[in-house]
Structures are given as structure tokens and as C-alpha cells.
Length: 331
Ligand code: PMV
Image 1 (tube, helix red, strand yellow):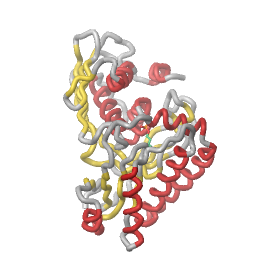
Image 2 (image 1 turned 90 degrees about the horizontal axis):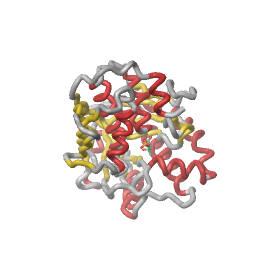
Image 3 (image 1 turned 45 degrees about the vertical axis):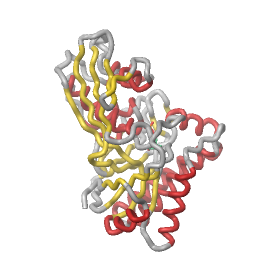
Image 4 (image 1 turned 120 degrees about the horizontal axis):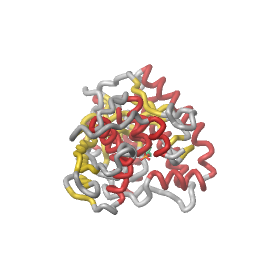
């Protein structure tokens, strides 16, 4: 089954477009990562994952019906060429909604307050915001669960950006992926901090889709990944239940490094780290040796996301000057 067949089977009857709509969706950082697809068409994962949404950091997307031969796609105020990868991904996603009216075009304005494609998951918030905006533009009134399923078709991790706070993406077992969507995990953690260490904000050369495929096809080490992820997810739930920050941080860090180990073991090798990435890791480990409860996670890119609690904020900021700190649950 491909995306179009899925939408034909499951999208509510699409009427005429209602008008312009605008939505914000938060970016999210996975503490237990999604890495590897069991179905590349529908973005169905090999493992369940768990993330925390980043509050005010994310994407605001506005869609406006357009009387023109093609969509106009703007990213941070700049018109993207129709043949650019960004515009093509956006238009292909909108195609899923306008199937009955292929001539209906849109102007799409996407504004990220996070660096695009620098391992800070702008595609997740982007597709989540676009999904909500399209649902409203057509007056479909889908539930959050249905929207999560559809956002997943744009980018896997987008299914988690429909929700705030901690979010679990249940992998599901169905071939059509109807049961593969995110759910909110209502265990707020005031004082939890995520610090963004920006090593390099340039667009990465191998995107996560290609990276996952290469890892799955060429890294023997990948075979152990689903087991690791399953065990980590269970431990993270314990950490949330017990408010055990040491456990949360340790599991998130080991999970991220395990994912990167499978990438490094691929062929050709996939190493997103740069010298400054490794230097930042060593700084975290040195501070931890000194007794600071500080951990990191990282996605398919060179940037680190530090995990700590409010009580450690001053010490962490002293060690990482210029750190952008996000408190997903407030203080
Ligand atoms: O949603 P995608 O296809 O961009 O993949 C995201 C993959 C990671 O960011 C590395 C992990 C995750 O769970 O977000």
C-alpha cells in the first residue's frame, strides 16, 4: 500500500476548500529514537519511540488556497523553487489531501524558529503543522490520533509533534499503519531542561530516510537495535513514573549512542559527528565525573541536546556559553 492508497481508503470525503488556516506545532526530541522503517512507503517504524516536545520551538505554517498552476512554497519568507526538495516534499504531502481536486493549489508559508535540517527535527514540526492546517483548510475535523497517522506519512517523527510534553509513538502492527501513531504521555516534569548545543547548522548531507535505509541494509549491528529500543522504552517509562532523572538521562544518552553505533557500522560509514560534537560529549562526561547530573542525546546530525534539571542550569550554562535552554514543562 502506498500513501495515496492509504489516504483514499481512510481520508474523510474531502469537500471544497474552506480558506486560509495557520497552525503551530512544536519540534520534538526523542529520548528513545525512531531508527529504521518496516515499511518505507508509509513510514512504519521497526521500534516504538518516546520524545519530549520543545514548547515554543517549532514551526508555524499557513496555507492559503491559490488560483495558480502550481503551489507557492515559502520557507522562512523565501520562495522555494518548484523543483527544490523542500517544495516538492510539501506539494507531495498536500497532494494527499487534494486528491479529489488535483487542480486546487496553495500558497504555503513555513516559518521555523529552529534551524532547518540541522538535526533539530524541523521536518517533524513542519509536517505536523501542515497536517493540522490542511485538515482545517478542508474542514475535515479529524481527531489528533488520525492527524498523527497522517503526519507520519510526511515524516515519521512528525506524528509525535502533534502533542505537547512527553509523547510515545506506538509502532503498531497493522500493514496499513492505522495503529502506528503517537499518544501523549501525561507525566509532566517541571524543571526538565533541554539545552541545544549548535555545532553546525548547515543542512546535513545524508537525510534520515537515506541514513535509516543504509543502516538497515548494511549494518549487522542494526539487528540488535529493536531489542535495545524496546528495553530503553520500558526504562524511560520507569524513569518518568519515579521522576528518576539519572535514569532518564542515562537511558536517553545510551539510546542515542546505540543508534549512532549502528550508523557508524554501516557501509559507506555514516558519521554525523564533527570534532566539536565529540569535544562536547567529553565535556558532558567530565562534568558528570565532577558530580553534575548532565546527559546528552543527539539525532542524525552533529548537534547535541543536553538534558538536565533546573537546579543544574547555572553550572551547565557556565560550561556551555550561549546555550539555548528550553523547559518543555516550565520551571
Ligand atoms: O522523522 P524522520 O524521518 O526525520 O526521522 C527522525 C529520526 C531521528 O531524529 C534520528 C530519531 C527520532 O526519533 O526523532
